[in-house]
Image 1 (cartoon, one colour):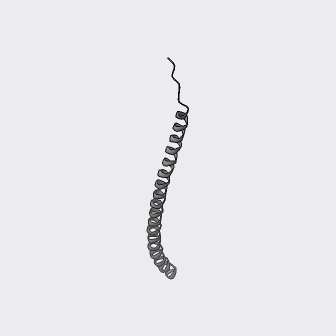
Image 2: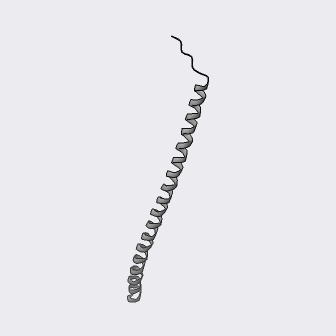
Image 3: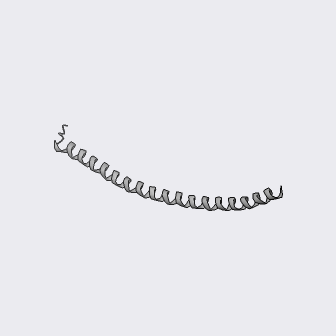
Length: 72
């Protein structure tokens, strides 16, 4: 039982594989771009929250520190 492979078949399968890899790279590029945007938003939000928390702590700490320094 002999089966001959047409000469165009390996080339077409190679072209199909390359096309699928390119398609996957485009899809992953979009996904990575969206994830980077989401990460930036989360980091910005976290930075604002930490800054707000830090200001409150320093504000109450400075007032308490000032009272202690004057009482000494």
